Length: 187
Image 1 (cartoon, helix red, strand yellow):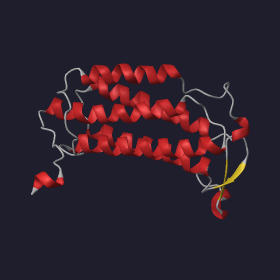
Image 2 (cartoon, one colour):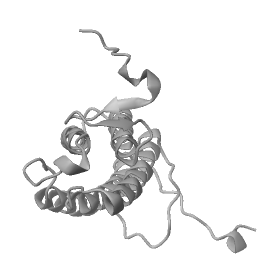
Image 3 (cartoon, one colour):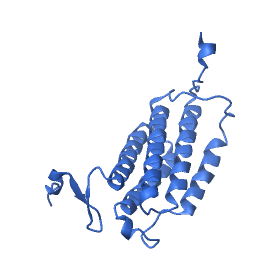
């Protein structure tokens, strides 16, 4: 099987239901950002210590779910129905439970923190901000086309999850968080 089809050479792509769209269409841009997010999670996983088996398993599940989400978005607005949709409220509830579990050993957060401290924590922040971008793109798409209503809460919670994981990774490695200091106090 060839990897190239030459169908996109003129700036068009085909959705899973056969609909032809421009490659810069909101739907294509949104599922492309989900794909980028999934790749960045893979990079994060490369930075996670092998002993963090639960966290690595959680990340693999998230990659699977994001692939499912990309698959949903790869169908046109006309094909969007609850029989197609896989993302659901239970996924968001699971993220909330995991956030609570990972947060249990974290110090109370009283200041903003800078995305730094270790490569893994910084990459978790990259993933968090990319998740927020996916959320913004999906919101824009949902204003003009039909999308699964469970996706926005899922992405919103997912960014919180990655924020928590960034903090968890620092605490687990004994690395202090770097706090943001107001401009007036940095002087």
